[in-house]
Length: 453
Image 1: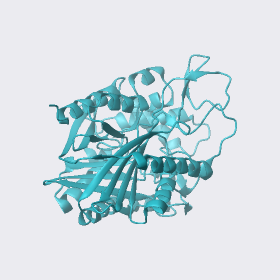
Image 2 (image 1 turned 30 degrees about the vertical axis):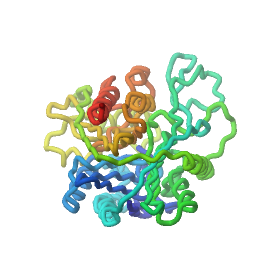
Image 3 (image 1 turned 60 degrees about the vertical axis):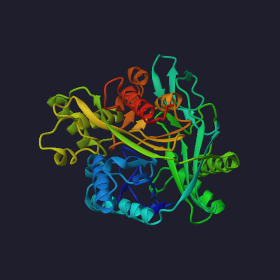
Image 4 (image 1 turned 135 degrees about the vertical axis):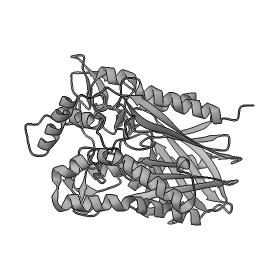
């Protein structure tokens, strides 16, 4: 296990998916947190990054660098983003909107990022030791809420406002599982704690870099378990899950709310320690599988419209935000001539297949023994998809980690939500059913890897 700082510099560009804020201060640092597994010559790497998502280019360059330095196969590396909204902006579209010195600082940071991440893997590999593994789950139902609602006019809206009288009902579930994997040395010394929970880290905002509530969680567990322990937070499928309780008029905001939620999660982790279940590590299996997601073909005139919209972003107060959402999606789906390097000048999204009618995504699985499966699932995925994987997995403990695969693909709604519309449906890069294609691929892998008698 290892931890490596990946905080972007003050003066660079930060924010949420569409963020163009200049970083004025670092509230708390961002990290790459790495676990390296080695069993009978099979090695695998699991890395959690305090970022909103992982650009395809960064994913590919980092995997390649790790393989060059360690010999661990590219297919045995899972990288996942915590999805903090107060981290670095890395999309060239939005870097270009700001330009100048902030853009230069961001581009230099992006160039150095693969090396920073790889450093954590090298340290983790040096620290390899025999470990005992325990797992456990506890329910937490007070801090996460499905943010999509059916309205009286028949529309579906994200976060329609507190006590909005036009709300009919929420249209989806939450995943209440706080899943914990605890790694300790043979003499019971704490090594690492993996914590998984499905909740958007989109609570803090403004111009200060922050890991959001996963940072608080980590700080508190270190106080209890010691400075050497590495807390690896990973996000469950939380594309339609956030912290806003619309039936409450009053709720803490910003850093206060982030600290409250991180504290509640830390308390849950401490509660589950008394009931952790030791598992036997009798094998290590890893699988990465390519998955093609059908997309609508974009016409040249649509692409020209989208480019014009993005030129106005940040400059025109009359520009509808939904136009920006649609323009970014169109640019991501237009097949440019000239290969991936040309594509990466305007997008961080995974590549298109030849012909442009599908995105080249991935799903991944690391299985420890006969009981624990760690799933790498792409995008800002809807909670229904993660729940389906858990419910259909043959492994007793299955942890689904979103923002994984081979890089950014934006929102991953289920078929129902794309057809309903709304922000997440407008953002989805693929045709209805793409999320279910990814789920089917994961479940098939889990069934293939399970040691049925």
